Amino acid sequence: MSDATNDGTNDGMKTIGIGFHFEDLPVGTRFKTLGRTITEADLVAFVNLSWLTEELFTNADQRGGMAIRGRVVPGALVYSCAEGLLTPSMQDTGLAFLHAELNVKGPTFVGDTIHVECEVIEARPTSKPGRGLVRTSNRVVNQRGETVLAYNPLRMLKGRSGG
Image (cartoon, rainbow, N blue to C red; front, side, top):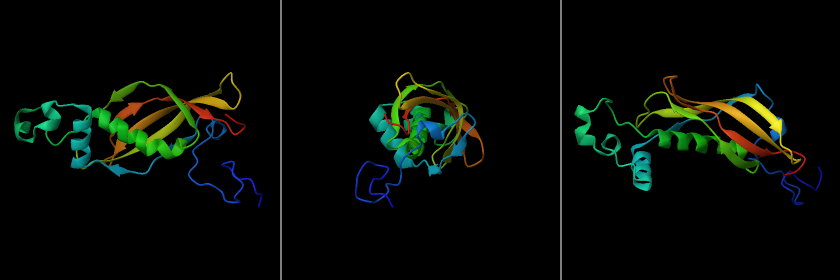
């Protein structure tokens, strides 16, 4: 075994948990994340942090007159959880989040378990060596197989040759 490892140290140990490099993600690559259940505590913490004080999210007693039944969560929370689920795929290799279009496709409720399904739809090197741009088509899917949110982030990732 070589003394140098993939993290640049000379301790003889490999580092696990490093995300995809640009070269690992040609167009057509598909992967999905593990799942995560969205809890009441997640909703309360997110609403308090973001000040999204709309009664849809904060008033359990007034649910009877609202169009959506159940304890619905903000699309921004669903997106935030999706990005958290994707973090391992770009740990130590992600350089920048550059752009995305985002569409909420349906409601997500407290107790729903979501995962993210991704397909690489664009991959190209940047003008600066050692990095590339990757756009994925991301679908956030609940435990019933329903797509509740879709977005297409463009990210800058390190290449294997530097960056």
